[in-house]
Image (cartoon, helix red, strand yellow):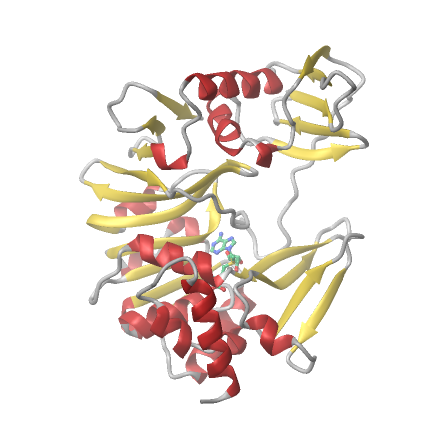
Length: 371
Ligand SMILES: C[S@@+](CC[C@H](N)C(=O)[O-])C[C@H]1O[C@@H](n2cnc3c(N)ncnc32)[C@H](O)[C@@H]1O
């Protein structure tokens, strides 16, 4: 057994600490190091360090159950931001399990990235069953070369994944390894009835989760996965994504106080449910000692990061929609419902673009329409 094979076995053991997986053989057989010849680690000051195959520790790092940033791009403002990464293998396997793949299934992956997941799929299903697209042309070229070098030949293309890949439809499964604000109906049209779509639905940053949807004649419908995960957001161009930063005058607006923590990831489910009351994607950022939210209709809210001695934080809000009030209302509803977690939430998507989130069952009568 070679060094990488031993490391890959260790990776499979690490992933299986969460429970045995039918993907063990793929984890042991596909050399992750081929797909991650370099990765980047960000420091507290925002700078990045590159580790390549020439560096000590590269090989062992690649076979840990960790996500690795593999591609950076520079924004017009000169910031280097992540545009591609190799997903944490344990998460990848959790998603592949949720896809319930069987021999003979045709799969479309949105977000080829390094090509590692396409390789896992091709190893298990056969190359001819696997299709994968990425907006990044150089990413697709590099992935193709790595796959070919291993004797794998899934069909790849550099294209916008929101369109799916109609030329190769129908698929039995579509898996997206980037997050989307909405599930494109084009995907439903390219999935056979009874087939599945697995996607990280996030109308705003951190607001949403992976959802596994089954294709019915007139809708996509299914449940959110019990554990939260976050993927990088879909980009519209093969370049650094535009970062939504709140641009508001914080001196204006009404004042109030809150006892809630303003960081979206401290209340993931209510933050998601609040989206139903908000007019589109919410930008989130920091301004000094405040968390700031805004939407492009001019609504905004700022909340103190640190509570005062009584546990309260100052809230200021302006614009047509009170973003923080919407979040507090969602939090109250969620409390009244007994704080349901992701495993009690599901989603129905219809051809008119409606995204209906429901509690427990589609006809339970408790639900939220995303905008
Ligand atoms: C987390 S990475 C994917 C990891 C990949 N599955 C792997 O195994 O390495 C997310 C990928 O989504 C891609 N992406 C972003 N916007 C996209 C779009 N509009 N269409 C297709 N892919 C997109 C990014 O370029 C990035 O490579």
